[in-house]
Length: 147
Image (cartoon, rainbow, N blue to C red; front, side):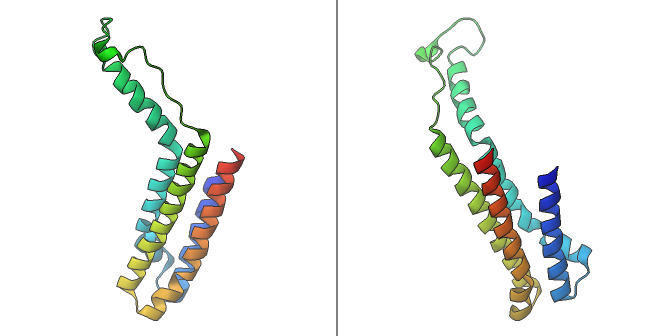
């Protein structure tokens, strides 16, 4: 709950700054830049579910050896065990996914700003969002390292 509150407050600050600089109302600014959150969602989804995905892909392949539950062992796959990925590899994938998501978010927000505003206004409007993305990255890395 605290994480959601911090994320919402940071996004609210970015929207407030953008609205102030561009003279949009806050609701319009929030809607205009909402697509910039999609890469973050994608990055955090990859980071959160990477290990589960790797485990379940293996289990799926093992279950193909006995697709109907009749005791078959096609290809000798049924007796295999799930291979565990090194935790360091998982951590690096998580960090990379989060950072790629944040860079993607900044890129999408920049594209939206350049499309809607003059170059000078677009640059000024994104200063706070860059700060927000850096804060999101720091928060995400902190959660990863302390969990």
